[in-house]
Amino acid sequence: MEAPSSPAAPRAAPVPPLRYAQPVRVYQRRAAVSSAPAPSPPVSSVSAPSSSPPAEPPRRPHLASRVASTVYHPPVLERDPRHLHPMVTRRAAGVLRPAALSAIAAEPGISPVPSSVRDAMAEPHWHRAMEEEYAALLANQTWDLVPPPPGGNVVTGKWIWTHKRRADGTLDRYKARWVLRGFTQRPGVDYDETFSPVVKPATVRTILSLALSRSWPVHPLDVKNAFLHGTLSETVYCSQPAGFVDPARPEMVCRLNKSLYGLKQAPRVWYSRFATFLVTLGFTEPKSDTSLFVYRHGDETAYLLLYVDDIVLTASSQHLLQRIITSLQQEFAMKDLGVLHHFLGVTVEPRSSGLLLHQRQDTLDILERAGMTACNPCSTPVDTQTKLSEDAGPPVADPTAYRSLAGALQYLTFIRPDITYAV
Image 1 (cartoon, rainbow, N blue to C red):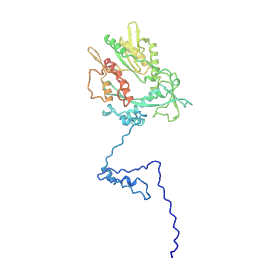
Image 2 (image 1 turned 90 degrees about the horizontal axis):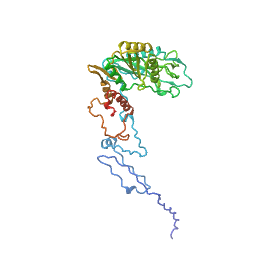
Image 3 (image 1 turned 60 degrees about the vertical axis):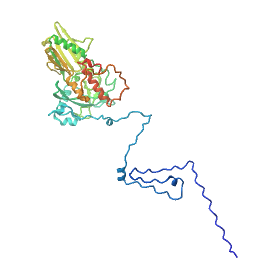
Image 4 (image 1 turned 90 degrees about the vertical axis):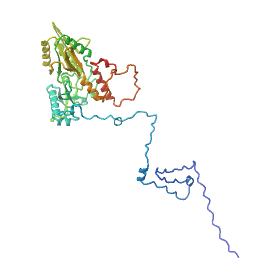
């Protein structure tokens, strides 16, 4: 007799296969490039999901072996066509701040141009030059110390140091000047008119030729702190000079009575002041060149050329020349430099056949700034048939330095009109 069988256990429902909206994507870790690459697992073994744990990925070689056997290729980045601005930093373009050195500083006993007020105050030559400049400002009653104006504009300033050189390039003296930052002035409030005429190069050559043909004496005149003689019509405030702040009133500012270097209206104010005084001496201004002043009285004739604060005076007699210089020295702090040897960067050398005008030192300075001291000369500086375009060629790395060199080349056309087209 058969024993009754126990009821069978219910079978589990089969697990439906996993369904995906998209086929399974398989990602592989690429082994490092080495002498013995590790074999990669077959794709079929991982193409379908499994309940077993995933296989452990192959281990990467040791760092030392990877570095020794792997050649690195930097990725090539494609620039988005929507952003084609040539963004180049100054360091990448090689535009770095020049070292505070100059050719004259290489001479023994010559102090280089300082880069800060602290460096200048620590050097006796520059400290003495700053004291002389500050004493001249006080003696001229350039400003009055007043409390800062509420809501007013206070123009800041900075010290500028330079080596004043003779015509042959040797050191003459150390020069320090307190210069205001005129770009912080407000138009219509701190200044109005700024234009100031200067003498034309053709006028200079004409007057020198006239004086040479008549054997007249020609003397250059140097006005000490010329812009300080101009009287301002606007109310301008500026900060006290760095290094010379009044310890008893450090919070005060300077209300200017006279003009200062750096102000936008400074050249115009000085020209008006000087031209007004020359008219009282009997000079007149021709309409052809308002920076040429002519004096005529009987048989006496004199010509005065004015280029900002550079002056050249010639007269029909030595007595008339000294009389005019004495009158100018009584009104301005002016020095007679004797026989003309240097004017506006032009060296004047007397010869038996006349005067030789050259700009050798300025030319060498420009070549040194441009890094072209080893260049070769050419008879034609530029091809007149070439058509220039704004879009042709790559842009310059430093536009400021380029404009500075282009402006310096304009002074060479003073005695070299043959390079005018190239400049």
